[in-house]
Amino acid sequence: MQLNKQTVLITGASRGLGAAIAEAFANEGANVIINYFKSKQKAEELVERLGDNAIAVQADIRDKNQVDEMVDRAVSHFGTPLSTVINNALVDFRFDPGAQKNAAELEWDNFQTQIEGTVKGSLNAVQAGLAYMKELGFGRIINIGTNLLQNPVVAYHEYTTGKAALLGFTRNMAKELGQYGITVNMVSGGLLKETDASSVTTGEVFGMVELVTPLQKATSPQELADAVLFFASPWARAVTGQNLVVDGGLVMD
Image (cartoon, rainbow, N blue to C red; front, side, top):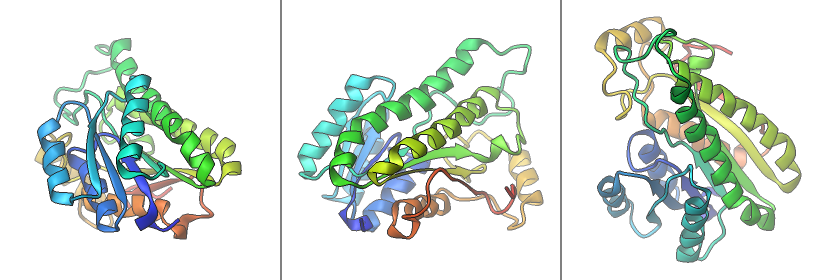
């Protein structure tokens, strides 16, 4: 399915990377569902910028009923089935190395928050779209990961653990859903310059990353969004279960 025929749900899309992904799909002519939890004003401003092929819908991705209602409302609004899910939402986390708890300070609740936001939220979004994708005989599920799995420059314990679980989720879903024409992949960025979540990252950390990155720069949200477009496009029709690292070559896996 061409990008301009797709109806795309992007979780956590009101700002940062999610907003960049929403803009990328809208620029290709896709119908875009901008999910937000708290950032209503930013989500509405983004819809105003993108125009008639975008709608903002509030939902806590950890709540299955809210996610189902969001998808049903958006599908009714556009009059087209959901074809594409981008699991991008980040729940209660910022990339602040100074505030990160160390191994002695961590509590299970820190991990639970990230696992629920990352894996449970993704499961809810996939299940909300699955019947539509099976009906179409086509689906694209793209999960947002991190290169910290391969290279934990900063030990963001709970965040990285949640994303590691998401990689397992990606590959298991790819195995099961391929029979329905649905591909499931992951795009893993490095430290993005910049998003709301990385705005508290120190210049020292950015400088360290840029120094050892072959392209000598931090990846932008727009550059990562382009890789997401690839996985949703017809050019990636034979690719599933993969994790593409988009970080300027810092991690070569």
